[in-house]
Length: 275
Image 1 (cartoon, rainbow, N blue to C red):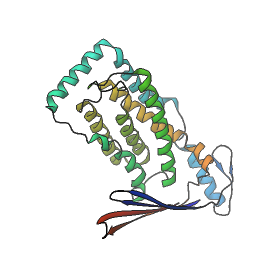
Image 2: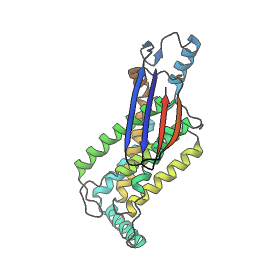
Image 3: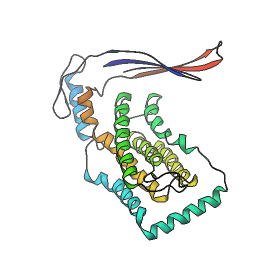
Image 4: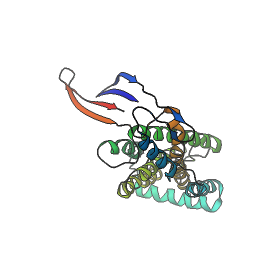
């Protein structure tokens, strides 16, 4: 499948160029099996099928639910447990003393860094397991799962935020988003990259409490939901490969071209992706 996407980003606006798509479909047969085509040799097909069947991340295992399930359970327990509520308020008071009236709202942006890195790193030379299109599908699926889980729980529980601004504190959506990205990176790239992503995730979770937007149990449960959502994205990848007829061996090319508009005195950046 070949798809060209042209996106122009200017200082004050974003305009999307035309998208042209030419599709050359492959016949795909049941359960992760790719049929022979003119562009894929039988040996390549066999290798692809073997990799898919042996992939430790796309194959669901009950043990993968232990960590996210435990985090969500602890966070949920903290909503109404008296002993945990005491800890929550002690942390809130400690953050108030540390903050001393100065808020740091970097967390509104840092929550997206791991997800952006997950999509981009493989296209700039960092060794990745999946092609760009597959990473895009995984990230999209994970984001949908996260949105459904987070919002449904938020409005079902109705926990008041530490700053009393609303009743949608539990769980933390920012924390869920950043931990989803960090877990995606852990499953896709090297340990060193994953450590950096998780450092951003823990820093963002800390800032959610520092900025008086969430309780301790909110960020604990948010981390669990984020990790679970990332794993859901990988579990559903074999299905999405068949649904979107994705060839794991297809090549992807991405190019970036900076530009400057002297009339409007605006800088721009054009991206082109072919896959």
